[in-house]
Length: 251
Ligand code: PEP
View (tube, rainbow, N blue to C red):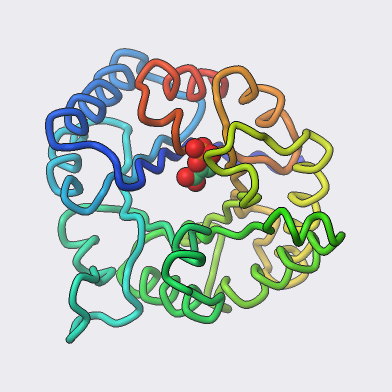
């Protein structure tokens, strides 16, 4: 069995003003430092307004920082966007690409997401490539073909287990309180793993996170699955105690 160090990632989405965000990040950094040896890597993805300050307050801790999106270009006339080298420049190490909220709200296609992942790699960032089916696609029995199709197009050929993490997030489970069953998660993660192994020499070493209403009460059973190598956590990552309990599941 390949040992993959779990990654517990918090996606703050469009939440937190400065005081709350810095309290959350510094509280997390303090807990991580107090604990010393951790059973997982920790990542937080704050809104862009807080990235630089969160990098500052987590600097000497085990807490990594990532952006929630990046543009595919390195610079240029793209009002409101952030380039991957800008994230790297302020000390971020990761970036989420292809979150379903961006696919839905901003019409991002898997091709767009592949370009963003390439931009992330070129800037030496780890790309967390998000995939997942809608409820309608699941009801139609299309889950595996949709997810495998998203992985095939969104993950660039230059991906490695070091520069890329996959996050499987069924759209119907995000922010809804509904979690996919252990069997549903296992089926999709096994299918993603098979695709990665077919395509990449180190496909067995990629981390595949599960996301979708992960909370302290369901984290242990999800994280115990063979091909679940961590979690992408939205709502529960905004509560220090809850996020910490999920992290401690990996201890
Ligand atoms: C997410 O934002 O990626 C997510 C999984 O959100 P939640 O945990 O709130 O469902």
